[in-house]
Image 1 (cartoon, one colour):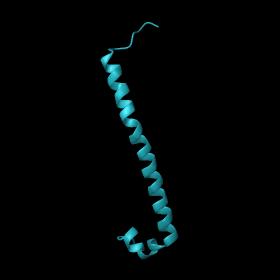
Image 2: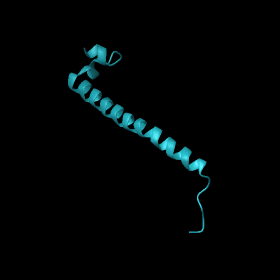
Image 3: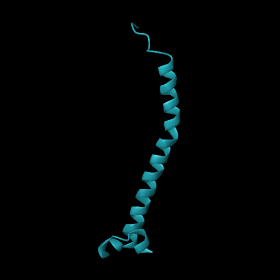
Length: 60
């Protein structure tokens, strides 16, 4: 199993606890990126809508 999770790792890096921590960190990073990607279409739509309305009025 260790070889499957980290095939290029040195023997010192094959510690199951270290591998579990690495996998947990990668899972967290993927979760964070997933959340960012889910908001991207909304942000893009808002940006496009703002562009269609023209520049914001000034002088306030």
